[in-house]
Amino acid sequence: MPVGFLRRLMMSTGHAELQPEDARLAIASVLVMAARADGKYDDHEATIIDRVLAKRFGLSAELARGLREQGEEAESEAIDIYQFTKAIRASIPHEDRVAIIEELWGIVLSDGVRDPHEDSLMRQIVDRLGLSPMDSALARQKVAGGGSAPGM
Image (cartoon, rainbow, N blue to C red):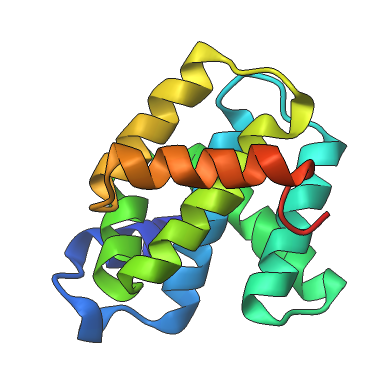
């Protein structure tokens, strides 16, 4: 599954070509990538991702878990974040990409520790999604000020 998915992402040149399932899987993959960035991916972070996916896409817990598991597989097969961020940027409106950054910060900050690898990944994702450092800072502040990760 990931090989076909990754091939479709790399061959996609625009909004109309990307299937909604591929956009969902790209978002799930980026969420997993953020959770794994500090080298400590655990059940707590997986549960947060499940909740984010369930809320974002209106999925049952079982379907959200399945989407996360597909995201884990796709992320482990990926060379870098480019194919995921390209798909998200091409198919998701600006304001929804900001919401994705909030969800990513929620996962990154869920352990209470700012890791340099996570910060670096977030800068790359923000840039590749066509967002500004200010968008990211405001999203991070919103999540940090809220006291919990999205979906909690």
